[in-house]
View 1 (tube, rainbow, N blue to C red):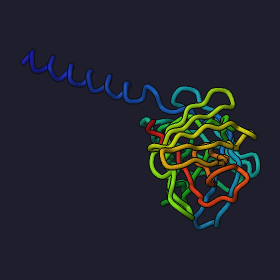
View 2: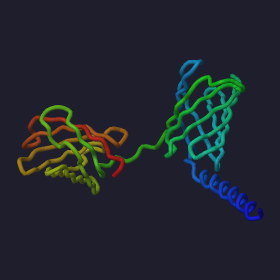
View 3: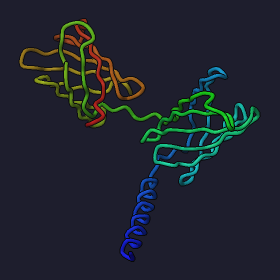
View 4: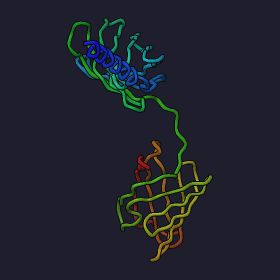
Length: 226
């Protein structure tokens, strides 16, 4: 019997430690957020500021006077309350693992959900880099540069390999690379420019000197897996 009691107590202790460990590192939501809310009250877009201390969240919407408080109950879920000129109620928030977005539902106290919302954190612009692995597809014209393109960057200089094609170029503007390409069957020029997300680009290419007109177009998407 004594062993059974000790076993049960140990089980509870392990469960408690596991629960604490599971809440050891929720993402940090401190910052400014763009939030779109939809529901029975219509659709609104607003700016919300959040401050996080440990598992606790405090938020404020300066435009309408609403305030928010909440607590992480798992690494990805927050249960909380809101209050403001229009009343008070509850919110449930589900956070992305990187802490850059969330979605959830809200309602008035004692009532079912009145609407839903999505939020995206306002992040500082990241420096554009060509370095990495890209998945390239054709967007018109003859097919070339299709498939996996791996690039390295040193200062403004960029070197990429896609199949048998070698691309050498430089950033001519903060978001645009002008390059030449060579392959066993020919050579030419290649120009590609990055979108604001730094995870995609558009490009055009041609044969021979860079004074010739483009003959094909491509789009590239960064492979976030490496």
